[in-house]
Length: 120
Image: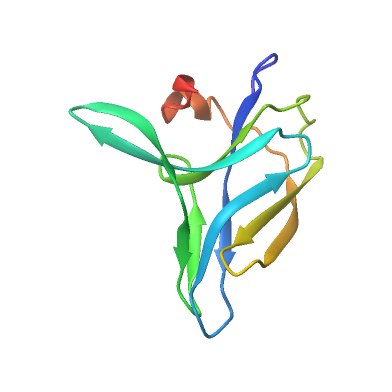
């Protein structure tokens, strides 16, 4: 994220090795004030973001949070983490479960302007 900006996005792949679908209803990330599930959408030639209540991951399936698609928005970032460091990222499910990982901080071009995050 550019210096001074308090919003960024997180991208990851989630695997559900269980025998029932799981609904992701939220997230938490170290150093972020709040997190939201978002989807990029296009209406009448304009690209924007739409907040989601949940994301469904099928039993035995995968779901990928991607630039230009469904992703996590991290809001109220306290300070910009350095590239190649890790940030603790957790996903919450509707059943009360939580899955966490140490996500590697990467910077790749100007992802925000490419995918409409400038509106945040």
